[in-house]
Structures are given as structure tokens and as C-alpha cells.
Length: 317
Image (cartoon, rainbow, N blue to C red):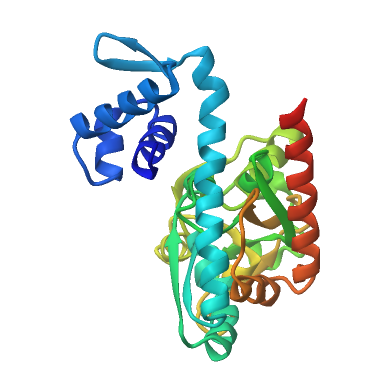
């Protein structure tokens, strides 16, 4: 049994049993992946994956029990490396954060500036994804930390923490009729074409839910992945923008007008997620606390410990 075999099994599980994709992820060939899986199965004396010809179609009964153990073995191997690296050098290494454009553009610059001053030797990388890919990146270990709204709370297999709540605002040109309305209603808003986020992004479910509850059909003429694109199309006269409040900058957006929408749409919660059972470098704790001061090292360690104890009890049953 070796790490290459374990990684082949893990990625086969993560990539929907598609060996071509597994080979691409692990930078090898499909025959090599098939061989590694077969060798491990022969050593264990059981098949882990059901097959139809040469194609893998799912888990066997043994595979459903054994693959989670493989995942834990690989996680502990990664934890061993992480712990050793922290003892070698507590202020040098890598930190990968998976997040959305809005968080990376508006919420994180201050945090990054403070973090870089404190840890100049740490290589920091941001991967900007849509919410489900953020979940997947943390789940697979491709990212150390995930930051997003809503989606992280739905991932039961991740450990997520609330960081801060925020509201939406309306953005319009200076001469737009809504600038004369102190507290616009959903019915008044629906009289205008709207430009906002795609369904999976940045609190969009709260927008849809508010219109649905009010029995009002909005005229959403354009959706986009990030706030800057929405503001661009508002400037072009396509409609009223609905964006996260943090994404409106009084200095750079002085050609637009901001209208409070906290009375129209429910507030959203930005969350930070970690993988269960993972060992965390010391500087990652600092990054997290800079982003959300309530998330101290003691708080996170306690949550990780409770998660590990709960998983241990479930595994022993």
C-alpha cells in the first residue's frame, strides 16, 4: 500500500469515478490510475469500485466503508506535513483562500494588507470561484480556507463559522426616478428593469424570496457574477442594480447613487469554512482572526476538537 494508490482511490471518488479526469488531476495516465486501484484492491482482498466492463460505476459495499478510511489516512498524512512545517518555520509557507469576486475585491484587501505586514514570507493565493466550487476546493484540500455567503452553511461536511452580516443596496444613475423615493417598495422597484447577481451568488436567494413573498414579478434583464459588472451596466442605463452594500465605494462610484434596501431584502451572512480534521498553520489562525475578530484561535481549535470527537464517536458506532 502506498500514497499513490490512496490518492488514486480518493480522486476517483471525488471525480465521479471518471478515470480520465482522475488522471488529469494527478498528472498521470488512465492506465496508471487503473493499475494503482487494482493493486490496492488486490492487497486488501476486496473490490472498492463496481465496474461495467472497464468503466467504474460506483462503490461496492466494501468501498463505501473503506474509501472514507482512505480519506482520513490522506488527511492525517497532510496534517503530519503541516505540523512539521509549522515547527520548522511558523511564519513561512503558503495560504490558499477560495472566495468570491465580491469578497476578494471589497472585503479582503484590508485583511491582506495587515496579513502581509505581519507575515511577509507567506505566499498568499486567492482563487475566485462560484460558491459550489469554493465548497469543493475546501472539501478536497485545494484551498485552506473558504469564504462565501450562504453556500458554506449548506455544506454539512465542512466546519463553517459566521463572520459578518450585510445587506443589499440599490444603485442607480443620479437622475433616476428612484432617487426621489425615500423607502422604495418592491412594487415600485419592479416597475424598473433590474440588474443583479446570478442565482448562485451573493445573497441572490434573499432577493428572489422577497419578491416571491410579496407576489411581485421583478423584471430582471441581466445577471452577472460580480458587482463591478453590475455597476457597469447600470452606468450604461440597462436598469437598477442590486448589489452587496460592501461593493459600493463612495469615491470610485461617485457617478452613481446608493439607495438603502435593507427594508426590502433579508440580511445575508458571510461565512468562513475549514475542512474537518485538518491541522492549521499558525499564520492561518492569524489570517482568520484578521478577517473576523470573533474567530480566535481558541474558538476555532475548540470547534475542530469537538468536530473530531463527534466524528470519532460516529465512526466507533
